[in-house]
Image 1 (cartoon, one colour):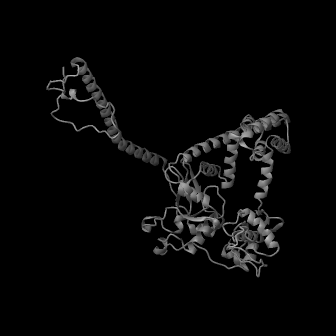
Image 2 (cartoon, rainbow, N blue to C red):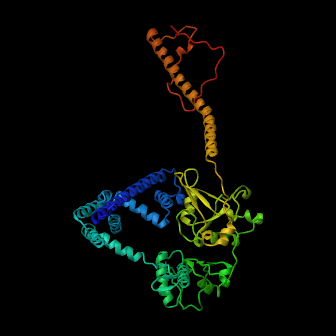
Length: 532
């Protein structure tokens, strides 16, 4: 790039790249905001009340952005929310980002600090922060946060209180996998221990009744204190007849039992191979950890159902336990592009819909027609599918091809087949397709021509009908004009001419309805002469 690189030239290039990067991010965010408003208008234009079937404009835009950027649903939703904030709440800060005068971390920090500010007060904070940033030559992230907090404290002090309330409401326990075979919670723990603790917290959180006012994240946080004293999680609904009410909480009588799924090959379990395994809720673990878990675990073989599977089983809506176990091990995660939610907490869905009225005409309940979708993307496919929505097709090897509402195509291969050769072999290699560009182009042209010829006849009928409509209107106007002239010439007396007897009829409507069709032609019809 530089024949004789100088430090000044290199730094100039660094600065210019940073400005261009900021401008590109602003441009991308503007496009995402435009897509959000477009999808919101579509969702709001649906007739009637779809109820639970409504897929909001935000959800539609998040799904398309997540697939296009190959990112998780949570990250995609955050990006769309940031684009919306820049477009509606921070236009002055967005202008600085577009000009390259601030970088994305600065804009992102402002978005996060001002997310709870009242919308009516945002223009003041936006203008104040933009003015400060315009006068700064350099700044730290902490300085930006302090400036935003100071502006909020002066203009909207209630937002600071909301932040404290929000922090208390969103209390939760987070377990994050580490790349060294450990999992991080409060202290570093072996990955199996952390995964089982996570499962135990989830089951304790689900043990209370539906009227418990706490969120799942809050119940998980409160379960830690219950575990500390060795008691069950008490329900906080306050009802005397609560089915989950604990009259006299007592310590656990025995160790809790629950299921953690580990996938590994036979050779790894018996010690003939050091191929890693996969631990639910964590990820890849080494062979030693697999064998440690296998010593006290229940081993169950997993494989694809036989090709000559029972026909009756394929005609049932609910897959068998063996088929469902195989599908979850094959997929590992939600099959929507970019989604990383675990398959063990996902829905098993039919790619070709199952026909409850006549199962033989719908999609069978077989491994080649099933896939794991998280609830969010399952709803998206169900209620925003069809020609104008999301469509999926599954190949014999488990590859799912998604088509977005804009016609973009995304291929999703099963994660289990990527990690384990045995699963990949069981799925089967995809059939190679040897294409011929010239032959394929000729076929597309021929198909397009056939479609044009088929459409030409319909277009000709439509044109003929439109010409007949215009002719009918002209004839009616001409006859009405003759009737008006007859009224002028004869002062209201009727015409006695044997021709054009219609001249004595009332004026006709000079418009034709949408269902009007021309009368059939008459072979002996002769043109009329004027009545005078």
